[in-house]
Length: 176
Image (cartoon, rainbow, N blue to C red; front, side, top):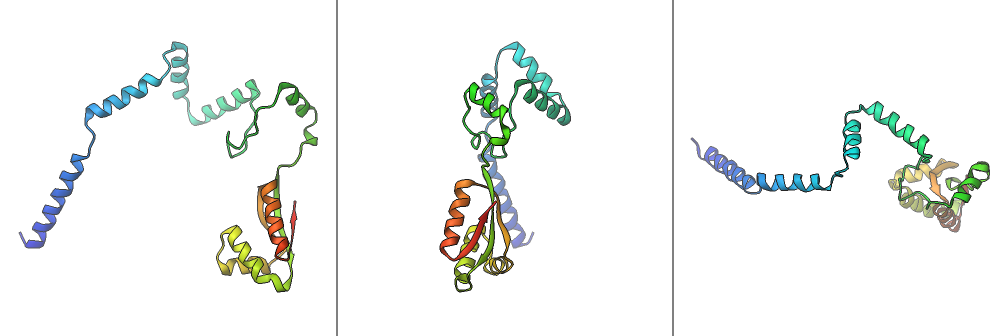
């Protein structure tokens, strides 16, 4: 066997030995599994329901979720999940919301760059680059193609902040 081959073989053997030294023992893995099993509910009714749900197909699970939402009057949450959801309202407030859904205030807005002053073009390009994470060339093309939609589905406070920043630089921005 040539010298480079021997060196490579030794290196491989060392790496295999090193990896096997860091493998968890089977006793550790078993203890880990047992600890998660202990966290599972011991209520036989719940265990039965979990077993039945785990045997459903993906489409059946989706139907189950929609049925539960309808039955329990659970509203669809925005993509942000529970953290982005508004705090739970009192039952009387919920009834008022159902009575007048059209009167709800708009919470998500779109910010559109309408135009800009010729002298402030470099500043506007730099700010657009920072806001949208574009390259300098892309942000220049973006600004020159105004009017153009900058951001969609933005919370009101963030949209107002963007508008104020760009108006200070000499741009005309609208919130839709």
